[in-house]
Image (cartoon, rainbow over all chains, first blue to last red; front, side, top):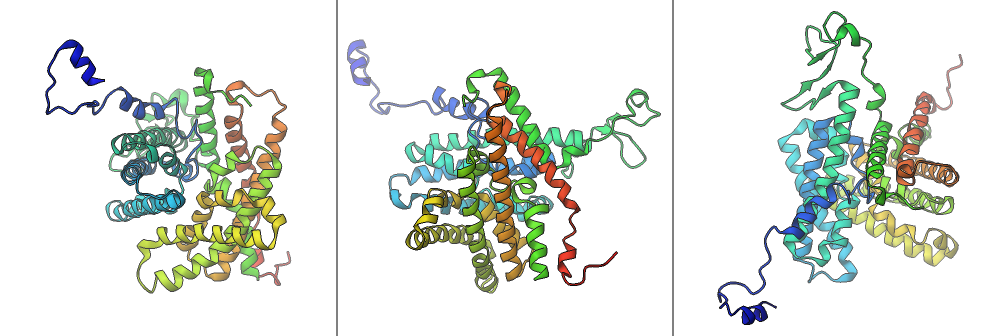
Length: 253
Length: 204
């Protein structure tokens, strides 16, 4: 292809230049990152990886840590699997993939134990459960086994981002309405809404004697949002909104 | 016996694996479209949880802890689960073709069901002993089974209802699971401590 165009145009090609050089971050690569964010989201569309993550979303900070851990594991495991894709025998590929994932998750687990022990305690078994998170395995089977390492890495990171996006969004809704705060437990903890008193000051003060509170002193934190079931409702609403805007995604059955 | 019942009831109803910890959510949502397949998968989960839990307990207690290799826990547990599933599949195929036909396709799926690995990890973090971990395995599996057949039965009925198009299928499954989770909260009232002193229930 490249040679024939050279002949027609008569331009002498630079011999040092590789024959078919693809851009490092072209259109196709961009789609790999952006597609899983909305139209092909791992949680709301592909229904992968709902398992291990919902329980951590009652606060934003653990969800953020979980999202970063999953992005690391999906990206690196896709990359590693794609590097080895030609030497993995078909019959034992699932076990090889499981070992790659388990190794990476062990790394994340040990790193978290050292770097952020309180969050590590909060996430407890759910870090370990990234191993059986269907997104990781699903992307390895569907993409990394058939594509080059760089693209596999991007695809892994894209799917991890799509997953993290939902996770953090659910976390924001649940923490804001359930506890009135954001990022509680992290260095940038914020108190958003609630009645201020001597120990805690809120940005939106609903204490009866403040300006806003004169009209909104009835506001109280919604304890339903702290319950595990609230995560299901919040995601159901996300799915509802997304499929109302994009009717192509509606379940036919 | 009392302690066994205590943990069984607690893990089946009060701390239900799906509804309180979201374990095994992927297959829970994907395989709950019809009642018959849901029953098959539920039975397979009870079976595999009941077997892998004591095996993982023994490995953790007599291999990992004495050798101080706790960081290998994830890899060893997942290897045990994968090989147990394979083994169980072969044994059932040999001795009970009827059960094999019923569970057949669901057994391989179970390796990546987070309820199995999650159960083993919870067992470690809660420091159960051998009997307790068997009770936890069977109870957790039973709770999972109850939850999935309930969801499948509701989804079979809801197919004939007029659901908004954007909520059909997945959205509705999420909502029903959430509502079921709230319904299961009412079981928190069961006091499992009563079973701990089984013979000496306080008369009031």
